[in-house]
Amino acid sequence: MALDLLHYLRIQAHANRLANHRLHTAMAPLTRDELHAPRTSFFPSLIETLNHILMVDVYYLAALHGEADMVKQADEVPQHDTLPPLAAAQAVADHRLITFCEALDAAGLDAEVRMQRRDHVQRDRAGHVLAHLLNHQVHHRGQVHAMLAGTRIAPPQIDEFMLPSEGHLREPDMAALGWREVAVYGPLLPPSRG
Image (cartoon, rainbow, N blue to C red; front, side, top):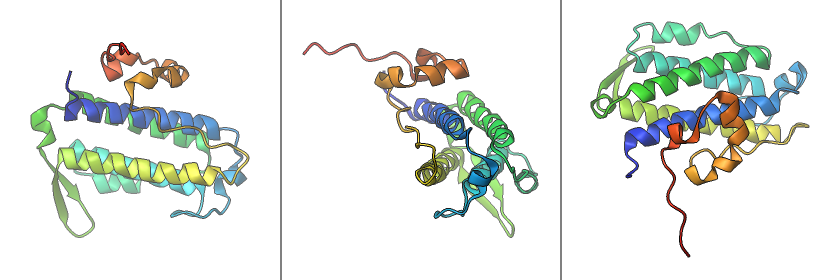
């Protein structure tokens, strides 16, 4: 089975959800003060970085769905003060991304996405917008991961969600989300014979 771009994007969308689930679960014991404490990164706190990830996800998901009010949706994303409501809202966005990728076909990758910016309309192909969105998530989630090193919470492993052969490392996360390995990754390669 050749891994095509659609299958890859679907795995990436699931990996995004898995990484957010694991990261938010690890961060759950942090207090409000710890979430808001000044830290060195692009955004000055854990909660500001997480809010930024969510806001950008809402914007690009609205654009991918062709919703005319994408800027308004992004502007109206609440700036969450604590982790539980933010994690719940992020889960909704993550599932919306998965659903979009699951419904996508090859022609859909080339479909034009019109993104309303403050002073112009930006046009790109859906495949490029998805690649950008996924990269944006990884970029800022990595910053959260690095900032966690300055807290009492050990940064969790969040980069083992792409390889089908590492299923044993994500069993609890897959079970918590109600997913089956074969549904996300497809069949495993046969064992090597030496």
